[in-house]
Image (cartoon, rainbow, N blue to C red; front, side, top):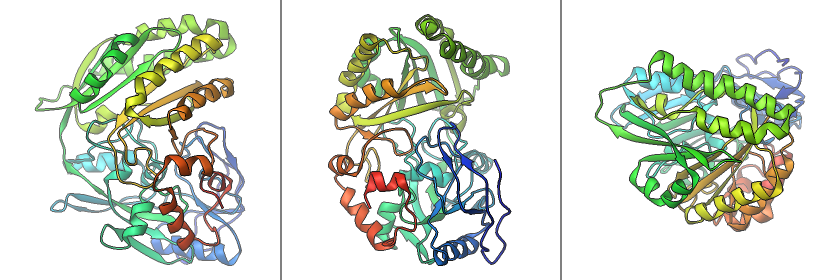
Length: 447
């Protein structure tokens, strides 16, 4: 990927840049120029310069979204210099971090200070602003998405002004911008609630599909964090239960951990997916082998080492958030559809949950939620499978993950998000000229 030189202290005008591509390789953007500001002042200057030249502006993270949420033909703002922890307030229980900081860096810094986020997703390659702006989440009975853990933020608006936002300062902007899709401005820093570091015990074990679905509510309510993976073409699942523990820490052994997380979950799985792409008829047989490859294990470690896992096999993904009460019905319909249509699906279906939250565009806004995610190996035809899954999800008032593939538009989304109009009203006020728009935002938010 060709990149431009970073802007200087004046904010600069950037230089022409080559194409930008996302992690999965399914989105390419060709910005007129790109900049990499190192602080809020440089970021604001870059936005003002783009406005003077009539360019739209989008900030990118590490490209882990499958949608073109960050694509632009105007000014591309890169994250690599806008990084680092800016302050830790132990008394308030908060950490303030620059927007381009990778979650990996944040987690390691917090661990060095004996602190932790309460909950997080299953990868930590994303930047903090990219993860929160698209609604990245893990699974939890009581704790919600990363965006729901934000207590304050700093936003560069369309005119280059800098807004400090919290529940007490610019509260209407704060309510929208915690999960803002980059539509309201460019976030320059975020403040998260944190807590003293704790231990989690992970219990991973195979379980039949029928048992998981029969016991779904029990497994969700009796565990702080429950998720499972169903392997299409089989009646098998792999379950994971994470609960707080008094310790002692007992992380996976170096060899056994490598076998499970790298060799089986990445290395062997990569080969299996490649074989399945070349020989689709082999996929059901491979799925049966894959579903039996991972064995039961229990380990105890600090949170980010339990919540997150390496993900080196590249794929495309669609995920929908449904009312939690619809989980078992929707999964049964999906399983029947895969069997009936003859789809060859080498990737497991991932199921997670979240409690209702108060973010306007959160996929869990106002309702207890189940997430059902379908994946296909990169380079494998996915359109028919995803379209069939999407029909099932939308029949249950599903809300698509903002960073994952879907075909929904503003008319549909306004019906399934009670506070959709509240968000678009803030957008109309902050960015009436649509400095921060692109084709994706025009589709999902309207113009």
